[in-house]
Amino acid sequence: MQEYEAVIGLEIHAQLKTRSKMFCGSDNHSIEADPNTNVCPVCMGFPGTLPVPNRQAIEWTMLLGMALEAKIAEEFNFERKNYFYPDLPKAYQISSATNPPVIGGGLKIDVNGAEREIHLHHIHLEEDAGKLVHAKNGTSLVDLNRAGTPLVEMVTEPDLRSGAEARVFMQTLRSLLRHLQISDANMEQGNLRCDVNISLRKYDEKKLGAKVEVKNMNSFKMIERAVNYEIERQSDLLNDGKKIYQETRGWDDSKGKTLGQRSKEEAHDYRYFPEPDIPPITTRKGDENAIDLEKIKSMMPELPWEKKARFALEYGLNKKDANYLADDLDMANYFEKTLEHIGETAKNSEIMKNYAIRLANWMTSELAGKMNEISIGISEIKIEPENMAELMASIEKGAISGKQAKQVFAEMFKTGKSCYGIIEERGMKQITDTGEIGKIIDDVLEANPKVVEDYKSGKEKAFGFLVGQVMAKTRGQANPKAVNETLARKLGNSN
Ligand code: ADP
Ligand code: MG
Image (spheres, rainbow, N blue to C red):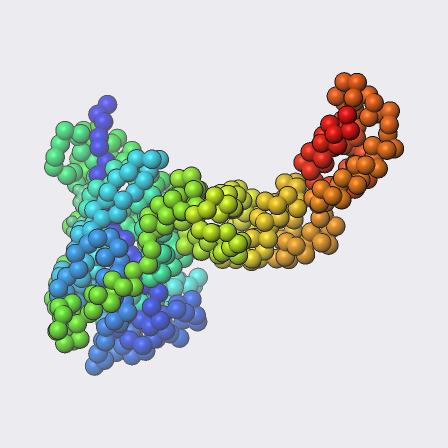
């Protein structure tokens, strides 16, 4: 049995969420609308129409490049990638892979605590094709709503080594795209897609083996499964003394297998040539129509890895909670908005850290649990940050017990009602006023002289009985800690 090293590179497409399409003014947001309703002569490929590049899409591609510390080209150009398919009426796709806008760069990933940097070869910008809808009667219909939507294609170097690394890379990239707010980056919805190239080589070998490209994966889990399957399949072939030939395979999720689609001999010759209808795009200062890199730099938001570090430092969160909360922009915003509502305390103060850690605990356990139960994201929950802040303050001040907090939270999650409202409605308000509690204790002591005597003569159990009497008199609403402290003080003082 020979052990092989897996070598993996990804080709990733992310749809940019610009208002209009890549080369025309058609709506870019309603791809799911009725077929062929978000189209115009340009994206339908009518002869004689002219493409006009979407400046926003170019700026966002460069913003992504800057976030990945890549080199931004001084000049890049669009080109025609020629092929025929019914969902591509022009018979060419406008792309920019040969002379791309973004070169190099890299993304750090953390797989179970092991950090690795995965390098990118380049990022280019292109337009998507339409879709074929295969009807039951055997005919196929063309829907061009998606035709001309802007895609960034990110091509990695073959730096990944396992299915888990490929999955984590894609998850890290999704987080980045969402923090930049340039793509919904949802694999299930198809606006983040990925083809995986996999080859094997002996550990002491420098040369890369023949690669197999796997398509059709639309979840992170599928990527990991497909890579692991392919590693095993290729190992078996090599161990049997067989050769791996370059080919394209498709992932069949129900079978849990990759299946052959086409071999290298059937590969396209795309006859690339520069798009004659779009002049080269420049980023050189002073050039006419130049893309303004300074402006793009100033658009850079806080990046996920920066946010993670800040959450740990500023709020004292442990690494796991900081990573969980800062990974998702909506989650991170919810966390910080809630803290703002608590807001009576100074940033970086111990009290603020206390609140932050308590809130992080609630968000990663109770809240995450409830969201999972009904499969919703943070943007869909009914609890307003303001009410979440009320809940944290109520617990912190001992106004409700931990057990009551869970009941209140469950109702808040279900109905979106305010925390204080629920506490009021259910008469849950704890009695924490030690003056009030003291009066009740006095009554209890007066009514039970014998028990007080027992306690003083050393019967510890008598204390618990007295606490029980106070709790009964207040119908359980007295704060147990306050009752215990006040009672101990009174029994001690009356000596
Ligand atoms: P092609 O010209 O066939 O598209 P590229 O060199 O452009 O191939 O690479 C496409 C993707 O495949 C990149 O992500 C790259 O990292 C990856 N790749 C290239 N060669 C290999 C290999 N031998 N094994 C695994 N991945 C590879
Ligand atoms: Mg290529």
